[in-house]
Length: 415
Image 1 (cartoon, rainbow, N blue to C red):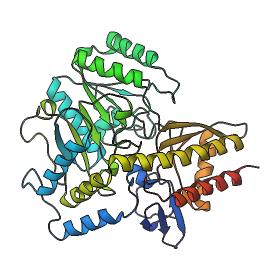
Image 2: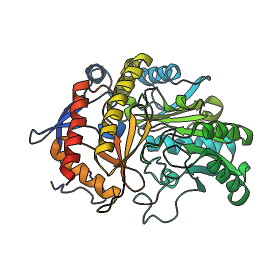
Image 3: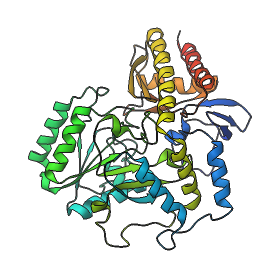
Image 4: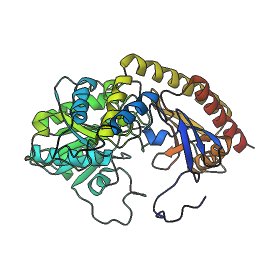
């Protein structure tokens, strides 16, 4: 399918145009049915068109569609930040700013960290992803395609290897790299923030090493560095917990969220300690559309639906289905490698074989899966990690059918 008038710089994974969706199922303009394992790239943890969200949005549209909060406050924004204070599992009262997107949350977190510390340098991690705006780009842990042809980016930014059971990098190796960074590249008293994803999204669904996370938390406290946890993709139930940092036993100073926060409407946030969030002068934070009233209505409903028990049930059921399918695929298909991630946030590594690279195998699977009626998404520096982002609310029979369609696609690629 051709898309006239669309910039050729947009990378489109599947050349189809969907018309409608229901939970984990979508239909294209020709009426063809697919099972959606992309979920808007992590936006639809509650699926397409969750009835409770739809009703909340309809009711909000009839009363107030928008007010720019920093000019004229509205109750929806206030209710969302109050709900976040109860929803985010930290031991301190939250101070919040709502934004339109995860990248915007990242940019504002950098402003907050600079203002609070009086420092400029930021440390990020290899294979991390934090957005496509100019400062966020420099945090990303790979060049292509995000940083190509752009020249110098806002900084200074320094990168460390990402320690994870899924990356082959241990806690000691990453800590040694951090020590070297402080000795050779930038002194610790010039570092404003360290930003890291508890589970990397674009990087291939890799879980941060818990030992390293604990030591990083201590080092940030020791050196007065702001610890920013980016949960834009891993948050709002993706891992079976409200936020993935609960798996690591640490708390952030600033937390970034977005994607599934408003079930498909554009809403994100940077939240954290008031001592940090209040560092900029009055008027230093804000935005015209940030905290739109309709998106806020959706977000309030999302948090109401994501009770702890529900998230555990949804996450455990989906995790069990994925693990069982992966066990079968790894035994049967030589290109299928390790399972990454945690809970329902799972990636599957595709390995190089004699006839093709892992990235080539995965690219072929994406096309074969589409023909089989299941929509899939790549990740990883080499684009060789299949990331599975079915709605947490996907019916068990639909989840099973989607995985069966992946199996049939793999079979079609095997001589």
